[in-house]
Image 1 (cartoon, rainbow, N blue to C red):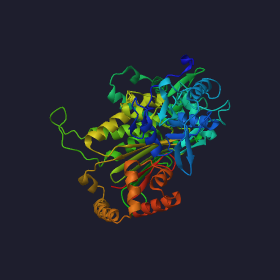
Image 2 (image 1 turned 180 degrees about the horizontal axis):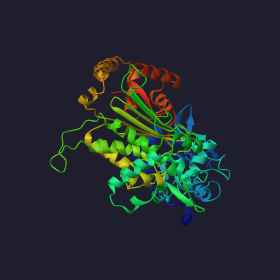
Image 3 (image 1 turned 90 degrees about the vertical axis):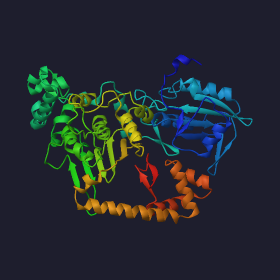
Image 4 (image 1 turned 135 degrees about the vertical axis):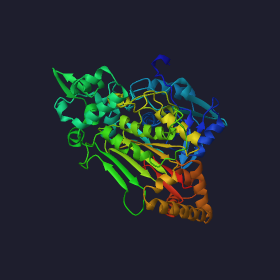
Length: 525
């Protein structure tokens, strides 16, 4: 095998839903994977004498989603798994390397240390860890036709990607980000002059005496990446349009563009506050959206008494406030503005969710670890950072997880979904009750209802049947457990599991977080 043909990889292949694979890949490790059955990260193939064609569909699916493990030498029958082993492990491993480095698939994302030959009680199993591919390699596809051979992983199966999903991955391949595109059919005069003026006022206040401060608007926009000179004339870039344009003009260029803030703080009305880009009362661009809802998402956050560095004034801007602003900024900076469904920010009692079109460009674990920045919109990133919005060092999500852990809050949840591609961040917020009381009489009533709900929930948990309690226990340990996994573990039919879980949802004991594809279950506390 020619190792030089392999792709470098520095990802997270050793992590399967909280289980960290050590250097010892043994019989027990295989059994622990089989115990959970096939999931979004584990696939089993019989492959007694040869690698089946379906393996390469799983290879593509794992590489294009979030990585996973394929076990060769495993038989599935009636949703039960048995170790049959492979007849000639050395030959199968050689065949794998020859094929993956050939023309069967578009990219090899696997390293030597990702392939393991394991003795399982006298039978040989091959475990192949397939990492998430770098965005420059995605979409990883089988054969020459990218639209026919691209797959993704959903639950325990592989599915063929739509043309829209493939095009989204192709857009993300580019070294030059999409927002640098020059819109030569537009002029700087087509932008919202008030938005440009407000930005420049903020820029001048943060950077007094800066040389760009005296430039006319069109030249200033060129400097910050909001416009570009083309054939002797200055035209807005896509970044400039998104940041400074009016909604009617933006939507002509980006038909799916939409910004929506929804505040649900009372059950008596559909929402207690809403701001969206199409309501014709403001420009509808992303910068104005940020400034309009920035204070709203942090208005009720608990603020401990703390003196600022001047030893005189009170500092109410806590790490929690800053982390929430970073979540909002990240969604606006990393959104795929060609994607569907727009950006949605929802605020509820003690909970905030922010979702944007576009999947993560790096894996979740790398994003949470911090230090790696890969902005989908580099120019929008620059426009934000010049007025000190957004982190250039790639520590936004890392900071969020760190602050929440230090504060003792529930761990934030990041969910990727596909077709269409979306990224969603859900966080629980510690609320200052006195602050929320100022928002209206309904808040006090809502707090009382919350207490009553908690008491009723405790009563419901105590009244669960044995089967219901077992399902809740499984979901508490792993909220990503599928109905197939649960039915296998409990030895009951999948139909019965579906019925019981529906009843648990109705009782308010469990709830679904995120979409059917890519979401997970949460046990209500």
